[in-house]
Image (tube, rainbow, N blue to C red; front, side, top):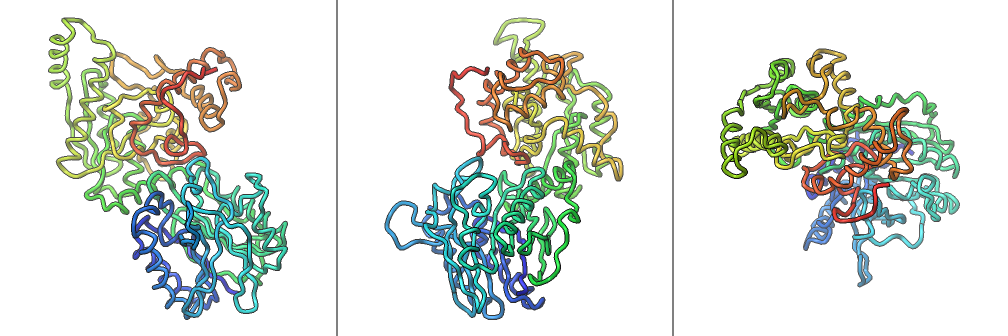
Length: 545
C-alpha cells in the first residue's frame, strides 16, 4: 500500500481553512499515486480546541466540514482526526476520533482510547475514551486507527495497549494521528518509542503529527512511517509543513541516518515558529516591538522576531536611563544595525526625575527610594512600549528569560509587559547558546552583549550577581526544581554550592508565583513551562525544603 503522510499546520477554529488543508493534501496524494493520505489528530478543529468544543455550534460546524470532505475521498482514501458526538446522553458526549473517508463517504471512526490529563493536556474534560479497540477494513487490508496518546504505552505505563490489541486481532497497518506538542529533544525519543512499539507487535505504523504554533504550544511535526521491524521507511522534517509518500512494502533505512537538529537549533526553530504562528494566525499587523537594553535577552528576542517576521516588521526601542552605560546604549543600537531593524531612542531621564519629585511628595525627601526607585525605571519603559503598541498596533514581545521569571527577578508592569514571552521557557544559559548559534553564520548579536556581565542597570554599578547566584548555578538548581519537580532537600547542588543557596532559590520560586500568573503567554520549549502545564497555588504554606 502507498500511503501519503500530510504534516499540516491547522489553525484552531478555522474549520473551513483546515478543511482546505485536507483537500489540498488529498489532491497531492492523488497526483503521487497514493492509495491513502493520513493527517493529524483533530485536524479540522486544530489542536487544542479547548472550551471551543463546548461552544454552541462548534462541533456541528466541524461536522459540516467533515461531510464536505467526502467528495475528496472519491479519488483517494483519507484518514484524519475529528471530534465526533456520541449517541449517549451523558456527560462528555464527544470522542476524539480517527476517521476513515473513502469512496465519497465515511467508512469508519475509532475513538481515542487513552486520554491524557497531565501537564498541558486536559482531554478528560471534553472526551470519552474508547471502551474497545476494533479493526477497520479497507479493501482487503485490516487497519488499526489510533490517536496520539494511544501510542505512549511504554512511556507512561498504561495498562491498555491499543496497538498491541489491534495487532493481535490482525491489523496489517496501524495509523497514529497525533497533535504531540514539542519540547527540546522530543522528536528522536518519540520516534524511538513509536518504532519500538511497531517492532514489538510486528506491525507497520504511520505516525503523522501536527506542525505549527497554537498559543503557548509549538508542534514540531517530525512525522514518519516504519515497517513491522521498526525500521524507518520515511520521515518528514521538523518545524515545517511536509508531505511524503511511502511504499509500506519498501526497504527501510536505519533510524541513525536521521539527522535531528541540535539542541540549540531546535530552540531557535521552535521559538521562531511559535512567534510566526502567533502573529500569522491572529492576523497581527504591522509587527512586533522590542525594548532593546543592550543586554543578551533583548538582543536574542529581537533576533528571533526578525527570523519569524522579517526585519521590516520588528521595531526596537532603546530607552536609556540614568544608570545605563555607554556600552549598553551602543549595543542596543548595534543590534538594530546587525539585524537591519529600525531602532528609536527614547531616553527616560526626564520622566524618571519627574517620578522622583512625586516620590518626594508621597514618601518625603530621601536620597534613595530603594526598590520603588529602581522599579519605576522598568515601569516607565514598559509604559513607553505599550504606548508604541497602542499608537502603531505592534505587539510588545517581553524579553525576560526562564531563570529570571522563576525567581521573580523581573518587574511587574515593567519588563514583564507584553503579549508574548518569547524566552519565558528558556534558561539564561540557553539564551547565550542561541546568541552564539545566531552568530555562527553571520554577526547578529553584538559580542559585547554576550561577553559582559548581566545587569538590569537599575542602580549604580548593579549586576545580576548582586542578587542572584551565578546563572550556571541558578539554572542547575531551577532545572531540578521546575522540570524535575524536586524539593530543596532532594536537589543535588552544583559543587561548592551550599544547601542554604538551594533553599533560598526554591523559596523565591514559590514566593513569585503571583508574578508568573501575570506574565504574558510563555512559548513552551521544555517538559515543564510556566503556563497551563504548571499549576501551583499562589497562597500556600508548604515549606520550600
